[in-house]
Image (cartoon, rainbow, N blue to C red; front, side, top):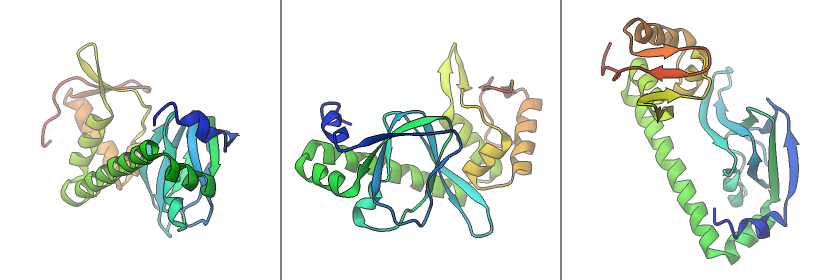
Length: 203
């Protein structure tokens, strides 16, 4: 977001602290706020009627969510705090007025929504065309950053966390991770996942 726009926007906002594991938005709710993350990290997820859960995105300080409320519809996903977080909460009416008066800011919102749409389309493509192994590999490579010549996933991920991200069972993910460890492709130390050598297309 254009940094010179944010102080003016935050003049409309109150800052609220959310403890870890607090649900901020429930899918299907009709609420009228937009949220900017001042500090912390949140997870966006969907849940089916039978309780199955799929994680959509993880957002951190500097990100915003809830922009789709501008059309007056219900919330399209749920959001929960992953760690203690502070959010600026802006009323829908103030946000719409600000977007209308600030073309550069409006363009940044549009670009952010386009980026998220691309990510969602890639996720749909992955679910439709890749098997569980392919989805696990894609997730690890997307989350990894290069450090000292190796790719490292610094986000602490359990098999269940990965399963929520790719829409499968924990058992299926555990089998893939075990095979990758046995093959010497990855190392899991409880905090990080290190990709030691190029992951094969198939196992």
